[in-house]
Length: 128
Image (cartoon, rainbow, N blue to C red; front, side):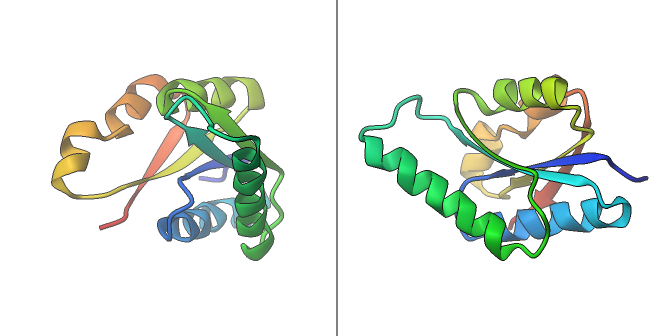
């Protein structure tokens, strides 16, 4: 199946590169659009410099990925709600996100909420 617009969710950890690589694997065959989103779930940013630093980190990820990035997005709120809104408003047909297999993730994973909210295909990448 080929996709027209792939959205990858990142958290700026080392796993972000893995997720972007998986998204590129899905986007390349059809030369699809690729967008990167970072969702700030803490609902606040302490200092104005935080936003600039965040945008610089995201731009570095985009610049280093080896595939044209259509859009870099930063939003504040609940991951599943923000991603669902992006899917509807940007004609995204695949969302790539990660999942850690550990005790904390079993209780607080956003994946079940994404599955039940996002109206697009969802690729969940095992991050260990």
